[in-house]
Amino acid sequence: MRIIITGGAGFLGRHLCERMLSLGHEVLCADNLLTGRNSNIEECEQNPSFHFVRQDVTAPLRIEGPIDAVVHMACPASPPDYLKFPIQTLEVGTIGTRNMLTLALAKEARFLLTSTSEVYGDPKISPQREDYWGYVNPIGPRSVYDEAKRASEALAMAFHRRYGVDSRIARIFNTYGPWMRANDGRVISNFIMQALQGKELTIYGDGSQTRSFCYASDLVDGLVRLLMADSDSGETSSQSKEWGIHYPVNLGNPREQKIVDIARIVREMTGSSSQTRFHPLPADDPKIRCPDITRARRLLGWEPKVRLEEGLASTISYFRTYYCVLKIR
Picture (cartoon, rainbow, N blue to C red):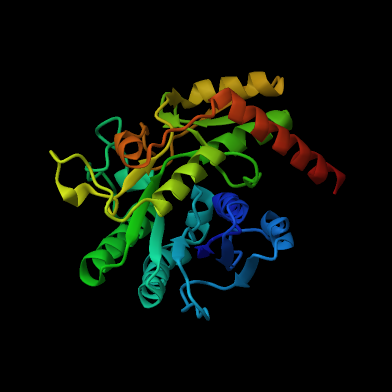
């Protein structure tokens, strides 16, 4: 297959590019490097089947020749990033998504949108199922990301219903692993870097809020399965066909854990003597986050395999190396 991956120089984009190349596909990576990094794709660029295009996808992407699939991952995804780039975040979720859907329509290509669990906002139910509409503040500081992704989902469904685009939507829950940025502001990277540097581990709120963490290789496996699934994949006959493959699918680890417990595990695994410091909870920060992955199990035969401790060991090893490089510089 010949596949376009927008945001391919980001954390998860890099992992997906690598996986697609390993499966023998040709990958065209489009990224404006607003939050992505050239260093993420250096190894991919050694493969002749990989091509990098530095471009903001809010401008039309002109690609010669056939395209089999468009995977739209471009978007600032960590709170510090989308708070720093609010307009760009909204534009890539609206203008950028429409451009990529238009390209998929023109090329008769399959379309995969990487959405987010943030569409559920600060949920009132747990675990979160795909048919839950969420509890989102549309004008809060986080709304630029939440609403960008909700608009992206609406566009994907509109192009599917109106033009028959073979679209799929992955709602990604917290994911971690090697190639995360050291300063991206996410929980796992924050805790690991603070522990390795002997700094206090920053916990927002009282640490009782929950998250579920999926290792990058597991998440990418889910994305590949969703992209490659048959177009007519649906639920059981007792359920509406409306909830077939074109509707959102949660991808994440259903093992829910408190933030304060994650801090303790990271501190123990790094051998750090760092203490914890509690700060006020940011506006609209969700109190609970846990996916119901029933649809992913049924439609894709997917569930995460990597245990948290195993994934953290690999991630900590990566950050130890990265931190040493930083110290040398």
